[in-house]
Amino acid sequence: MTSARNPLPLSNGNRWLLLACIPLLAIAACSPKVRPVATVPVKTGQPEAKKQPEKVQPKAVENKVSSIAMLLPFDLDNLNPGNQYNVSDLTSAELSLDYYQGFKLALDSLTAKGYNFRLQLFDTKDQTAEAQHLAYQAPIRASDLVVGPVFPDDIQAFADILSGPPKPIVSPLSPASPARVKNANLITVATPLEYHARSVAGFINQHYKTNKVFILRSGFSDENRYISPFTKGIDSLSKNKIRVISTVIQHGNLDGLIQQLSKSQENIFVVPATDEAFLMVTLRSLDSLSKKYPVTVFGHPNWLKFTYLKQDLLQDIKAHVTSTDRVDYKSSAITEFIRLYRKAYHLEPTHYAMMGFDEGMYFGELLGKGDNSINELDKSDFTGLLNRYHFVKKPGLGWINTHVNMLEYANFELKKAE
Image (cartoon, rainbow, N blue to C red; front, side, top):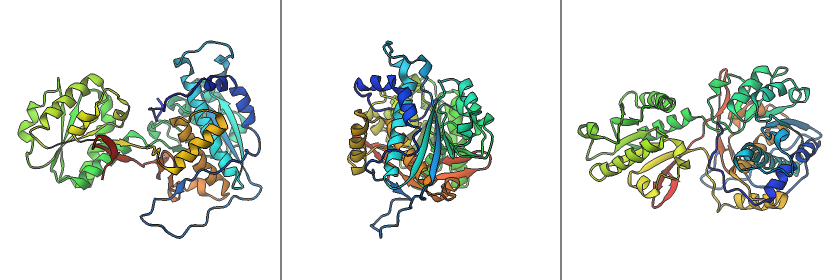
């Protein structure tokens, strides 16, 4: 499973031509210095309330060449010019191309500041065995930074084999728990689900005067990956003053909870389900309930992908959803990025291209500084086009981005919750 679903719409037919030319892109990526382009503005550190004196920008170390190995599932062996492909055949290849182009554009921007990079591109062929095989390759072992593989099984197999001097291994797209890989050098960029759940617990504890929270379960065991960290978080933050009432709901029947509801305070419901049938029935029941009782609902981050969840219903139940990324198409940084991306590739940038750009800017600059910054990520918060990074170090699990946005449906739009 990969993170950051919800890609922007696919661009025009030029994409298919680029996919056919991926081998040429791989060769071009190995040049010692990347072509400079105009710089897209991004922010390091937390945004400030008022304008402060401009800080001195970090400088690249003269003559230092940072080596980056990138492992992506292009599956080139099965990609032949002239063949007919459908969208499902090219999902991994398109994801890889978009991410690579965004990352490359970021390195180009940093090169304009004097940084130097050697970016080597490797094809995992969308196969776990190939990802494992690449861990033996000398150029990868000799690199300063490894980006990829993309999928959880692949990165686990790769990390288990990779030896030599310890080096950062970036998991670029997957929000899978780093406990699955158990590698102290791993950098998990996409915030794992447990931090979404903890963020919801913190938000409820801080913003609502309540002594109970209802968890509405569908009965599927995978919901425990959300429920467990949420419960631990709410117990710890409230010092056990907020009681968690967890119940399995069948056919949207909420009658068993009526006696426990308040008509004067918000009734907080956490719904960690992602099953469509369950959500359609249960959310309609919550909507009916909201006509008589104050109702506020907190949902799974995947709700943002579900087009069957109608905005008017979500607004009626005051639904809140967590997210790690948010695009402001009115910002000058996004406008400039889109302009540069179109100029460089004659394509529209996708969600994955923006993720690649953010990660390229962040890790490229840390490598280029020539100090120990790449091993001290907690000292380098970052605000990019799409994401914000706030890393914490967990023993045996590496670095984990814990930043989460809290969004709510209000005034017929999805906006940041206050």
